[in-house]
Amino acid sequence: MEPPHTKGQPVSYQAAVTPYAPETPSEPVPVILDVDTGIDDAMAIMFAVRHPLVDVQAITCVAGNASVDQVVRNTQQILDLIGAPEIPVAAGALRPLVEVPRHASWVHGETGLGTVDLPPTQRTPEPVHAVELLRRTLAATDRPITLVTLAPMTNLALFVRTYPDLLERIERIVFMGGSASIGNATAVAEFNVWHDPEAAHIVLSSGVPLTMYGLDVFNRVVVPAERRAALKASADPIEHTLGALLGHVAVDPDSGHSFEYQVIGDAGAVCALVAPDLFTFEVWPVQVDISQGLARGATVVDRRPYDGGEGGERDSEWRPSAIALQVQVPAVLDLFFDTVTGPAANR
Ligand code: RIB
Ligand code: CA
Image (cartoon, rainbow, N blue to C red; front, side, top):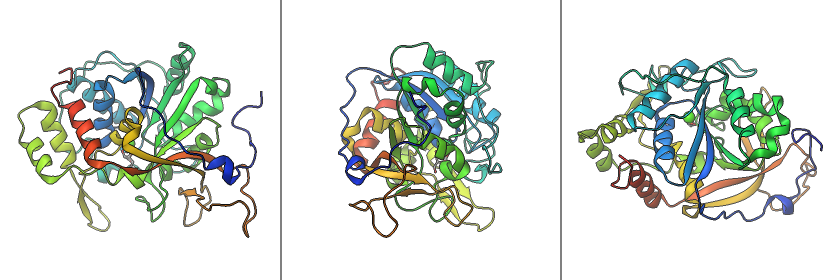
């Protein structure tokens, strides 16, 4: 079988633009989370561990919002906070494949968790690299596993290039990354893809089915001010931590521009996995710009309803991805908070 990461067939418009309306899972979905914990990765971990339809098999960590060692510590402290069972956690890539490291510490704070100060963890990370934890976890089960990556895709790219024969054990890659519209790291590039464009290119061209949870929906799931205030005022440690995470104010050292976090961010990608009916997806050809130009790190989404055009047919670098383009914000917020802080949460 041709290794999935080699060039496939050109993606025609008809082949790419097919409806994507997945069923709500009827049983727990085995998942590996890939994170750069981070304010919103923390919220995603809380949700994933607490939602009954997510079976977190492992968590792999990568540098991005903070250094990889800090990401591991943050991840374990969040697992402690929510009383999570023992879940294997491993450190992965210290830096991008080619690009220089550009941590987003001004966004997520020096520790990566804003002003949140949690007790030191007693958990110990796996004594293996994240790529080995991915291999071990995928090799150990006959149930296809869904990879949910909420960070620069360096770990996944290393895995794709190291174990191409194991890609068929991956059900789908749900990635928080990219955008069919505006960027955040640059005018057109989203941070996770921009941080390691080569890694994103390798993962998106691996042949594994893709769901893109990009800024088109990421930016819209905003927690209302009154709810943020109530969380901050809560004596419940989880609610209070959520209030501090959502209320964290980032200040850009260069421009002085500041903003309050406010969104559940990465957690929305896990919500899309368990409640796809709260989102609208379209399948379009996507390609990562890995040039050194103005659009480096952009996910270029070709939404032209035809093949060809002056630029000719799409070549095989274009890969179809289901893209979340609409979201029922109130329903997703209810899902998130009912799961993480509601009475049903196994608190
Ligand atoms: O662009 C948003 C992404 O960058 C999120 O995953 C956030 O945690 C940061 O990693
Ligand atoms: Ca993240």
